[in-house]
Amino acid sequence: MSNVLSVPPAAPAEAAAYFAARLAVETDVSDVHADLAAGVAGLVVVDTRGDEAWQQGHLPDAVHLPTREIAARAAEVVSPGTTVVTYCWGPGCNGATRAALEFAKLGYPVKEMIGGYEYWVREGLPVRTATGLANRPVDDLTAPASAGSCAC
Image (tube, rainbow, N blue to C red; front, side):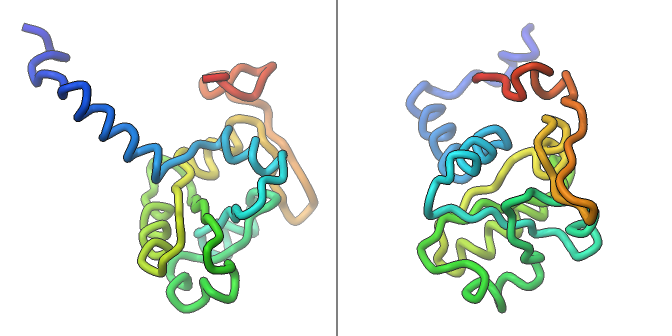
C-alpha cells in the first residue's frame, strides 16, 4: 500500500481551487524582494514582530507594526486600499498569519510572506540593522548561491 496514496488525491478541479486560494493569500520571499526592487506601487511590507526583533534586523523597505497594535494603528501606518504583505520570524511562527487576519478584518487586501524573516535572511537578501544594511551568505538549502532565487 502506498503511503502517498493511502488518502486519494483531490479531484483536479478541487486541487486547482485549493492551490489558487493559497496563492491569493500567500507570497514568498523571492517575489516580495523582486517587487520591492522593481518599486511596485500599492504594496507595503509590514514587519509584525515586537520592538526587540525589529531592532535586531528587518527588511529594508518594511514598516514596523507589531500584531498587537494593528487594530489600533493600521490606518495611521498603511493607507486604505494598499495591499499589505505581513511577515514575522519564519515558518515556525504564525505571527504573520495572525497579523494578516487583523488586516483582512480591517478591510485591507493582504498576503502573508511565507518563510518570514528567517527565509529572507537565509536567501541572502539585505536586512537593515542598527549598523546599516547587511547580508548573510545564501543558504544553499533555500536558494542557489549564485542566483538568490530558485527560479520557480
